[in-house]
Amino acid sequence: MRASPCIAYSLCLLTSACAYADEAAFRSLYKELVETNTTLSAGSCTEAATLMKARLSQAGYPDGDLHLVTAPDWPRQGNLVALLPGTDASLKPLMLLAHIDVVEAKREDWLRDPFKLTEEDGYFYARGSADDKAMAAIFTEAMIRFRQEGYHPRRGVKLALTCGEETPNVFNGVKYLIENHRPLMDAAFALNEGGGGRLDGKTGKYQYNGIQAGEKLYQDFTLETVNEGGHSSRPTPANAIYQMSRALAKVQALEFPVEFNDATRGYLSIYGGIVGGAKGADMQAAAATGDAAAVGRLKQDPSINGMLHTTCVATMIGGGHAPNALPQHVTANVNCRIFPGHAPEEIRRALVGAIDDPGVKVAFQSEPERPGAAPPLTPQIMGPIGKLSAQMFPGIPVVPAQASGATDGRFLTPAGIPTYGVSGIFSDGATTNAHGLNERIRVQSLMEGREFLYRLIKLYAGGK
Figure 1: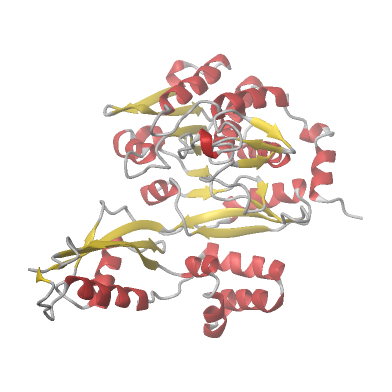
Figure 2 (figure 1 turned 135 degrees about the horizontal axis):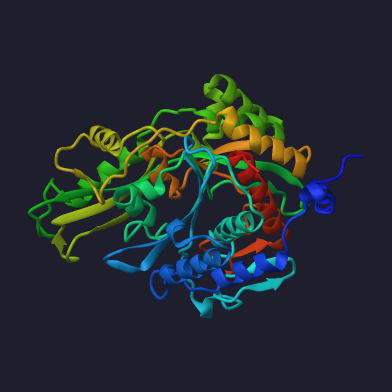
């Protein structure tokens, strides 16, 4: 009888091949990082980065390999880049990327203090306990363990703890580092948040171990109509609100073409086999041939629809200045999640063409981000993940996916650093509550991810 993934993992930890450092040291680091407030309003990423730098320094990293970087106008949004040099200078390093800033949290809304790490009923509760201080702590502690055990990787290992992922329109550390300190960020590829294992929340059964390869580009567009207005007792055919309403109806009807890449095709094919039934058959048919009928049915699922193509949706509207006056100015926000490889300007032109009204202006709300194709799922990337997953989670498939949301990978991949989301941290996908109340992470999953990433980094970096 084959052992379950949980049993297999527990047995693995008892063997010399799976032996690893004292869990207490990791818990101490994780607690310190989680309990350091790094919200934009009241916290300091610089303080958190300084604490992690001190731990790396104590482990033996020289000052020349530890870089605490802050933007001049953002002294509390500090970033830390650390390097464990490789023995082969011809190989660019592997980057371990994790953001240390967190979403805001009000104590009065939470059952527990969001900035105190609480362990309860097999879960850690706190803001950032999952997103993304779990991986930040895992990566930092792995770097410490590597130094303490005298590990000499063939490919260097670079740690980047960054700020501003949760508030990119205010400040983003990865974007700043790429633009102003590019040599610090150079890497062959990066491991990041966004991928993880999926388990059934009711049964605890492990379903798959995920790897994120690619994510959609985020872009807001402002639609604007203007009119001379006038007294409401004298309506005219030209009405800014009606004009905007017609424009938004055309945006609603706009359908961008369905596309596939390695990640989406792999997700539909492999996860379709897990889902089974009619839906699973549709997923596999869509992946294999792009079957139009199957795709049409799958688009009824918002999660899958968001994966298949660029989507644009109206999210805010405002206008008019008095209840007894014709509107002079109306604006609407249209939020687009752009399929990898397409430029924001291309999507803006598509909106203009669909609206087909020169009286409706379509403008970027913020500077458009640089597009990039999804990173390839090569054997060099997939091989180590598959090998390690088979060892730690026997019988559980590796499933690629493309994110409909966004991480800091959207800055690295277009800059020539392919970025993959992988963690080995299993969750049910519904009760982590990242960005929400009472954020939590399963203790067992965190410890599994800790071991998975420690060993995966070594598989990628080589050496001894």
